[in-house]
Length: 171
Image (cartoon, rainbow, N blue to C red; front, side):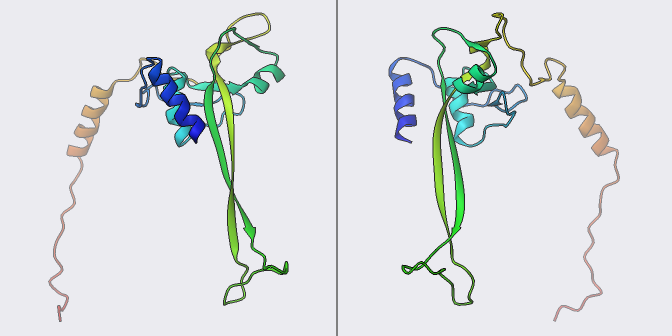
């Protein structure tokens, strides 16, 4: 966690404008190879350090796929954490049980830090940019027309009427 704070502080000291807003392009940032969307802190980190990009991959993923990393490319820090459940044991090594005889469980967290490079930092073996796997909606969004259609359809529907039940006895 300190590593992340240090990266943010260094970026601020170097005059990088840190944006904490979601880029509204219709897709969450994700790993290019696995397609798995980032969540939690990684969404914020990818927006701050990834300059609005939505696809990233580690150095190893890129090299294993035969891609080339452009000189001077900057990585984005990504945090992986996973909770692992285990059955607790007594000092003598026997299973720890609760009052009902069920095993007492504990959890330990595994945290790993990765550096992932944005898709624009990679080229294929011929030096051509990689093609995004994410299909963005583009400029075919029509929010005003869509909102007006929702309002029109709602107003044409029959409304519910709520009546108080007077037949029940309120004792």
